[in-house]
Length: 281
Length: 338
Image 1 (cartoon, rainbow over the protein chains, first blue to last red):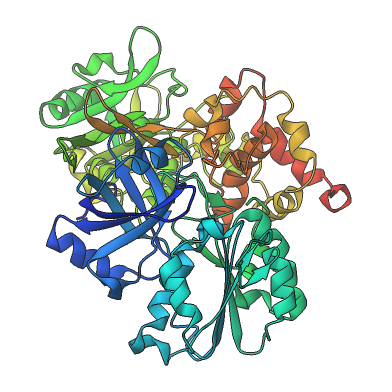
Image 2: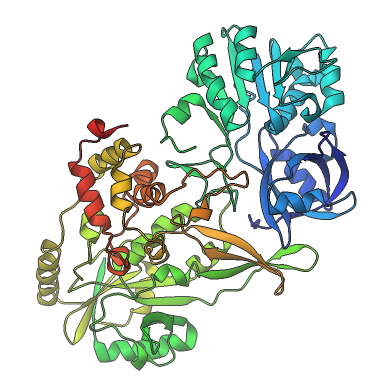
């Protein structure tokens, strides 16, 4: 039987500095063992996360930012914040690292087939939405879904993640991309304003549409009422939560909201599910 | 269910045989207090006049500190072969807690192999409580001083002998050559256990308490009940059904270790961003109580407290979970909501 606490040995294949202030970097990890790679990709569903592991620094739960079709690597976009993330920010291509996962439920992509998708992201929380959107835009999956609209907000243009790919999305006809920054900048072609206000202005139609929302708590708090106002029912609003975690598999006890564990039962929940749980986010 | 009869002397002789083949754990006086330890000589075992050990028996299966992995460039899981063990003389409350921990730590997708290995290799003989403590309330939370949950055999002290109810094959094998208890003996046992149970606290209304606590969530009730809490965490460390753990790296020893943790500490849920979903002792006390009396009920329709009374007995400021439950049942939380 597999030991659920034992990380896969991995190596960092590539590091990308995502933002102009270098607080966000993407790390692409490759597997040291073929069987680990096969196990990972047989399970991976966009929206899931992994526990990254550096001996001496511990572990941190980070969302997966790559689609399976991109290659034999797994991408994580990490904000430099605490002990672990500071340590990984000092690492380079070729360095060894551990990884456990994929963990959690991920987005219910099969359930959404045939529907329109409204993808709303803010700041660094966009990473798993990016993985999901990339997965869906692949030629073999795109026909399963109707219209796709994305709204991505960052404080300024320098903090936007995955710039070359998002630039390319603007030119595609099978996805409608909106970007927003908080304060106007020279040469900015898109929206200026906070995500909730921009969303209200866009006024997407709720009919046959699921809304998927990932962002900082303050954005989430003000965007949920807008979605409700636009007519999205709580069972068609999805969001992904964060909590402090240790084990990642529902054993260590710390990430519960009521009787649910964010690591095991989430991190993706519908607004309806959250309304039925105690208010402890 | 088989019922056997054994004199206390003969039990000692039997244990002397067991220690040759098994690791036998029983309450032993370690110079400081009674604790479950490996028995070398049967005479060390204290089964008479003992109420309960301070540390719950869960520590035999989920040690306070346990090496999970060793590091030599990559992390390797530690696989210690477990000698088959007999745990003799644990109380029904501690045995029932084992089942709750099974539920928490073993699922189809990611079973905790460390817990499972130790658990599978354990034969459990519980000891009935003829004289429960003042702080005992197993009957209020669905248990019994003579409960047989997760027990391979239940010993009941009948003066100079034990009556032994054997629930499983594993238990039967170890007591196989003994005489069956006769009808008169069994009648006496039933009479005694009935009387003891009768004097214990009444069963709490599980669903009503669950609903009351859910309604209390965003009220000042929790501020009131946690007012005197010091946040020492003893209630959770000594709780037989608490299982939370932290995982830390011991870099000098090159080991990744898990240690008992507690939801009563501020840093338990503190996130790297500085956000803390449980910033004060009110939210943390709420989590401890609601986990036992509301969330376990949601999960398996059972109260997740086994009524051992340790949190009541050892709390330095006398916070009493029985009082919290009783008060919650009487409050009008709808009227208290902010």
